[in-house]
Amino acid sequence: MGLDRSTYYHTKFHQPSNREIRHLLLEDAIQDIHARSRGTYGMLRIRAALEIEQGIIVNKKLVWKIMRRLGLQGLPGPRKGRKNLVNQATSEDLLQRCFVATRPNERWLTDITEHPTREGKIYCCCVLDLFSRKIVGWAIDRRCDSDLVNDALTKAGSSRPTTAETVIHSDHGSQFTSWAFTENVARLGLVPSMGTTGDCYDNAPMESFWGSMQIELLNRQKWSTSLELANAIADYLEPFYNETRRHSALNYLTPNEFEALHSIQTQAVFS
Image (cartoon, rainbow, N blue to C red; front, top):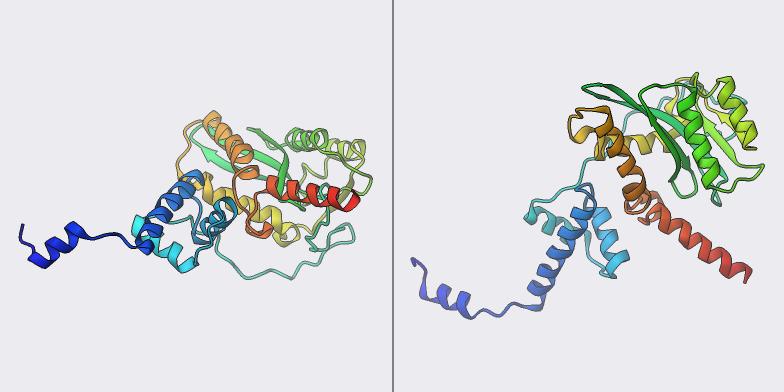
């Protein structure tokens, strides 16, 4: 076989150490987590998933080493550019770039994104709950008009309890300044808020969500039909993002897990 006698016998009678066995088990667990993340998780999210889901505490260098050996890698995050602080928030901006919420349905963010297919562009409007980063309402259409944003907002209003203090924050796009959207906001009893024109930092968490979806779904392939892309976006929002994807801003819990934990803690306080 072309091997030294000592190498042959060492290989034949070698008993794996506890460390080697642990690494083999970690390889299986890491491959499973990476597959369930649709190939999007990097070292930090896989390490968090190991601890949260299986109670396994692993050094991040070991996770990186195993992922490198298996040929696995996460998708790169968006590049950080220089912040544009020239435009100041207007008096209509109730958030003033303070993206903090203490309970669900306290502050909602909404915006529109677009992506091309061979049949034309698809537009998606989402409503994001700032507390849990959960997408609570969404709509997809070939047209970018007030009907699109109203469908997303109506879906959010019908699926979540709101109060007279629930803020809905958007930009100054024509869809959000339209009479139809303004009337819908008033009908649902929400408080409107808008950032300055052309300044993405006045709606930063929403822009961050779009960046994640762009990297983890939209830019990973060329889309042939509008229906194909619409189905893929719907599948990303509900089964994956809200239920499965671990969010760094939530201490690597999923949005659904974060809200469930808040509900348990609230019940414990009042019981």
